[in-house]
Image (tube, helix red, strand yellow):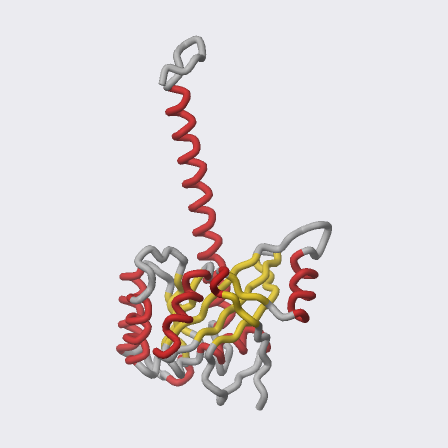
Amino acid sequence: MALPTKSSSFDLGLGTWNLGSQEEGYWRQARYRGVGKKLPEYKAVVVGATGVGKSALTIQLNHQCFVEDHDPTIQDSYWKEVALDHEGCILNVLDTAGQATHKALRDQCVAIGDGVLGVFALDDPSSLAQLQQMRASWDPHHTQPVVLVGNKCDLVTTVGDAHAAATALAESWGVPFVETSAKTRQGVEEAFTLLIREIQRGREIRVEEARAGSGGRRTRHLKARCHCGCSVA
């Protein structure tokens, strides 16, 4: 079965990943749909060990179908217009490789993304440990929001050790945890929507901090003036 994909060429040296000409046409239409309204854009990077279902999750989100067998991903890009709180946005999803041989490329993608979907398989506890190792290798100054995703919940009949370990890990990282099934579509939209909200929340916090910092500097500047308005600094 051929994979439905929105692949593209990438220029990570410039800190971007670029869509092909067909996707760019849709992208422009979506961004400027309405009267001069530009839709917000979010870059989501999907990471995790090989075989945990990263590509299956991404394809399920974009094409509402489940592809069980496919070649290992090196790097694929998908785009989707998402309705959120009665407003639209563009979600650009970068599906990365799980193999250790592609670590450098994966880390570059993480560095330029707006948020990360960290995926492991609930039926394979070792994949959670591999995800921890991946995160430990990221830049120590990494501040992009992360959502922890336990995939293949349809293969787990009871809440087991993997769920407990993931819950504890999510608490230690300070990130949300959601269970998904790329096969049944359970939790798929929730996981990506949750990541968008985390990205939005992070941006709002940075804006508020910038405003607060600007106000503080302005106050200090005013205090450095005498009563007649001349500078005494």
